[in-house]
Length: 251
Image (cartoon, rainbow, N blue to C red; front, side):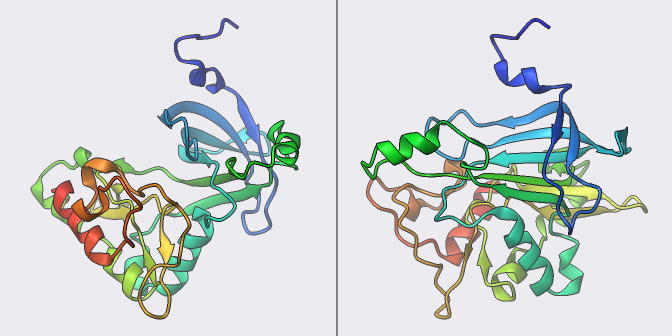
């Protein structure tokens, strides 16, 4: 059909994705793209794309929309799905329901995808190009914070599992914003907050500080970042209080 030159990322809508099968996600790996929920506009970074999808099981549509998130983290960064799975195993049972429900994940190396950048990186040895891998994450679809119907629902969403992820899971989120404080309605119609988007999270060392990173760029969504981190030079280590400051700006 005719291509949309103004919004080329929309060309994928209506197509099917067939991804590698994974033993811990039986029957998953095939999706039909229904719409684009988020697209990255950055020249440098992970190039994250988020799609609304319908899972296909035995080539038949399984009822209920889900989300498929594709990103390109560098090899020296952890990927999101193992972090979420780790938190599900570590935080108190009461708070696990406030974590995203992962329905599929896969990490694909660029050489397996036969990307043109593979031979390029072998030829161009400047040290300036970052090698990246494709991380695919499927999860249940959630509502945005601003879709709350009243102040009571807003407060219920706001009370999430961030503290327990830090205390028991030893993970610091590092990218809190209005876009990842989300929620769903239970079968009884009650609101349940979900803290989403753990792809920029860092694990804590034994001394309570985040793992060392050689990244020189700021981590976070600028309108919601702590003032200490908004510097032109190499940013200081991200602390728990920086996440708390982000919560303040979300309010």
